[in-house]
Image (cartoon, one colour):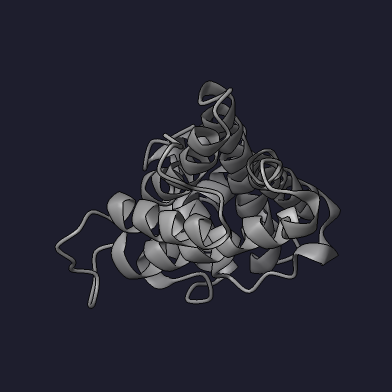
Amino acid sequence: MSRDPQSARKGYHHGNLRQALVDASLELVLEKGPQGFTIAEAARKAGVSPGAPYRHFKGRDEVLEEAARQGFEMFADLMEHAYKTSQPAPLASFEATGRAYLAFARKFPGHYIAMFESGLPLAHNAALKAASDRAFAVLTRAAEALIARLPRDRRPPATMVSHHIWAMSHGVVELFARPGPGSATPFPAEDLLESGVGIYLRGLGLIDQDMQ
């Protein structure tokens, strides 16, 4: 899933201009932020003329949408793997998806920024929305299996639980899983997320002294 930092140029030389532009844009996202560069800069980094990107994309936002789509596909694969390899224990599977979230953000920061920080309207791109929905369906599935242990009249909606964990995971990534001002903490990001999730699940009555 990872890419060589020079893959934009290598991809173009092998005829894959579309992917070369995506890779170049991912590098620029890390350097300047998702709104801090132009499609002409992406073309220059990919080693092509300023007009070349328009053979494949209408503008920078379309390049970012493709980068985000690819990121969500990779993200969904990672979440699915974490969920499946932690079964059949519902709690272990649920916690594994949270750790996978942190792992993805660390390993693929350019994709993560394109996915969550570029302000792209997911609903305007069917392929992007489908990839996003697939990724978060894994987390919702894990939540459904976990809350099934509660009496029906005490079960919160699975989507609410998954969105709470998503929000908590995103917060830990933004504040503590990246280098930068305010990111220093005496605790690993994984420990912060695990303890936060534990407090949340205890509040719902999903963790007790007998549950490992």
